[in-house]
Length: 161
Picture 1: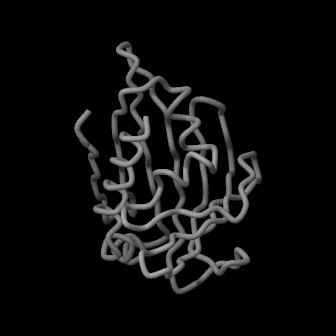
Picture 2 (picture 1 turned 135 degrees about the horizontal axis):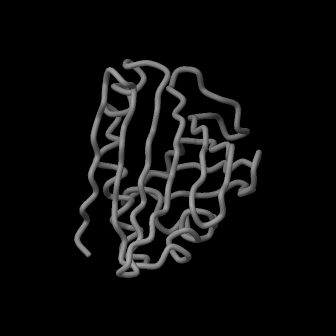
């Protein structure tokens, strides 16, 4: 499948919407999003890679990971799982942090709703809504290269599946 990631921006609504079909059943796509061993294989845009420090995919759990660059640079992120409907959706608060998971207030927090939508052709559509506290926060994430980076990562996922 070609990488047909659709990203739309609603600046005044402080939202990004991402939608992407994958040629795999929901169960397989769900695992790739919820198991750290699989997330590490696709989450970062190349030549970067993701490295998990700890992962607890449960309501109230956390994924603490870093993006490791080609020169060994490390950027830490924390994902707090707020609600999980197995095989269907999950919501998270996503933030930049230090290696112990302490939030970095110089970067915006993001609230994600990730839905997994099966189709009749054994394809799964991953539909994501990301909301921000302010228009400035949304613009900062976009300026940091979110669109290109996340599109590349989703292409990695397509290859993995």
